[in-house]
Length: 521
Image (cartoon, rainbow, N blue to C red; front, side, top):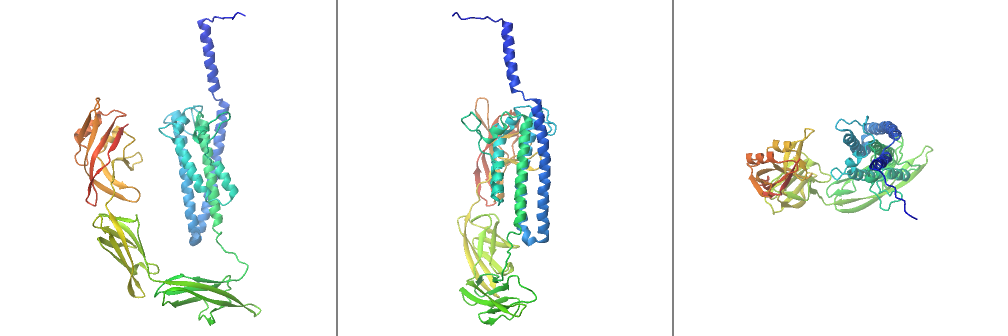
């Protein structure tokens, strides 16, 4: 059979092409009814979040009121509740900031979460959550994983724990008909309209608040979990300490559980009755070792009958000792103040003294400050305590003395919130901030040490269009005029290096720091 060939005019070809394009656009377009549905869901979730937040506030308020009435019992649980609220608020606020970022990406700087203009924008969520520059989705996923791991440790009910794990799950998702699984953030935010992405984040906030509420309720229930409820009478020995220093005093309370204050029992150690009715048993120790003792409580009942409730206990007498530890780490650094914790069990701080070789050791309140002199030579701390009126050497501890680690160089500037910021390179820095900065500084700020160094000088290395390096020398810690002139010539995306940075710390040692790469935004 001959093949039929139909020749189309150019106009008909154009009409057919436009029809294909229009069909594709209709397939990609999201129905306004669907978008309105997301808005209604978002409003409902927002109201639910507010209600759950008020419920959580009420539970926290109950725990806070109980702690005010009984600080000894409630304080540990209130501290845990504070941690829960801190972790939950941090993740909740992170989700909130991502919602704002998505709306601003779609509607511009004046975007309003409560009045989204481009609700059907399919790109904004992906830009904020999936683009390599921001990685908002990956950061959110890791934060959710951390929060889920933390919060589930506070839930005792297995069913509730599983429910929270499922609601905060970030496991990869495999779509029907596909082979490879998608990351959680890709499955949630790729090709999602702005209003849908915002609703998903609001749903996440609802799960965060719900998990927070379950943890707070569990903590409130746990306040009385340690109470002992008895249905029989037993004798107990409550020593102030089972370990006593030689020459110290052993002290213990022997009590009857659920004791009636109108009819205290008689207490016997061996066959000898205690001379008091408060159950206080104490005596001076004379030798080291572990010792056992036993006795019984004689209880008189209302009908005149008596019962005996035996008890036994032990105590250990040890030579005097002390604990000496560096608060920051297991070494001391020369040239700076090193906090030292010194304590002797059973001896007040006023009865403890200490001295150190290779430097000075001074008391500041209940803590001590060690300042070693020479690097490489051990510093030995000797602790003396006054026990029963007599001074005794209770501990001798040696520490290695090291020089301070190298600091990090940075450009200091004032951030948008008015706080001081430190630019350490590797990311864009605005040209305005760069030109307004006087120079560079150096410090150790690793959360254990916070020490400023004096910058003696540095060089900046620029590159011309031919790739030739142009070094410029600073004026001490400040940018020279030639360096500032080079800054003005830099265009966006250009970079230069700050190298040969010389800095001196409080230990008097001068060192060369690692270069800083500056990228101009």
